[in-house]
Length: 268
Image 1 (cartoon, helix red, strand yellow):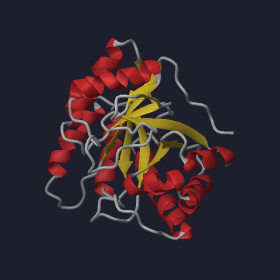
Image 2: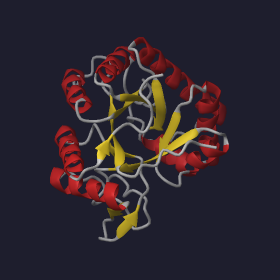
Image 3: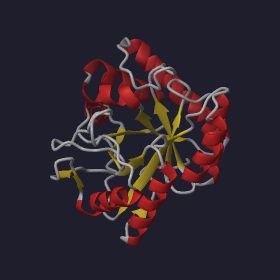
């Protein structure tokens, strides 16, 4: 049976980090950006070199996270640097299992060298959406985590197929909501490219995260209050103004009396 990480008056704040790679011009800018976010969040989902990131960036990100006492998660994705992992790839289950295992193991090596470890796994982009409903890919993800062991937690949105399969496999799971993404009335995310898909106003985002943490609901694009069970709230690192958004969210949660803490242990 999976471990129950649900919170009462505490919540985790995570961000997707380490997404510079090679000689990409944004790499130097992303260093300062990631450093600032690591001073705000409690968990860092670090790219593992497939959709973004490279060995040097992975190692540096793990060191910075460990130095800040931030839990480290493997942000695994499709091998799709050109598409930033946001294009569905019909990868054979055996190949996807190997890809995920490779990414988790690589990042965990850097995390352990920094005195920490990978404590959770969060799929990225198109893979995140695929394993929510795709039987073959969800099973491949869970098989990779089962093979790796080490007690890693699978982080995903509530009701995802991958979470159900992980629980059935005896893996620990945790649920996630998104601070800066719009929700439909049925609790699913508004697809990127559609109106209301991404939010940018820090005050508005902070208010909705406080409501999520204290009432368990998120305001949908039609104004309805949608129930969302979340152990962790994500601020996307590539959203414009991500640092300001994360700071506003953290300040609002603390003001509301909500304790910020990782849902998974940062070392062991």
